[in-house]
Length: 211
Image (cartoon, rainbow, N blue to C red; front, side, top):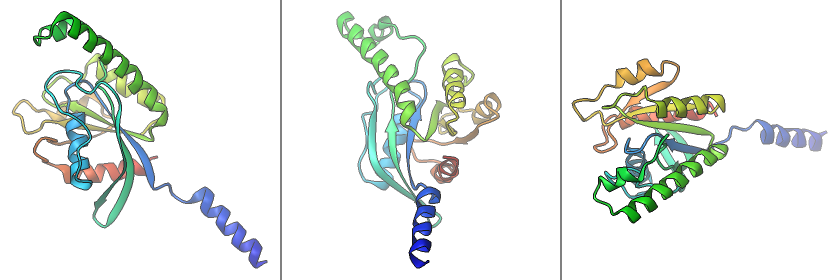
């Protein structure tokens, strides 16, 4: 009987023990601050950044990830794999890169890499447990790109947290994001200066419970 009880206990733990490690994807349009936020999280908890930040759109052209990032908040711990993805766009034109003083050949190469990055980002949705959507809170949130991203995640039944980044800027309007996506939790932060990160980490723990 003792052997049977031990076996039953092990099987119960195997099937019902809460999964502690999750894969957390960072999605959003270009230049919203995904990599800035990912870098701040990694630097806060691992001492290392995950990628390069640039004002040039589509600087992140391939998926970057950091294994076993562990954060602590109010005596709680959460370990996850952080996945930073290229910015999602519905249209990429090499001429936009030429406006940034790139030569035509370089601009065409950048546009091709950006397109491949978007395809890769979408494929990675099959491997994430939850997603943080990073939006620029100074811009109109109700755009075709943002609607597409949120709609895709809802259709896949992936838990979502929307971050309104750049609240340190005067034109920031987090309430407009909340009004645009009333069914999603929204938290305003500044990845650049670390403003409101405690609320962000608390929201990440809530997000993890939904996975």
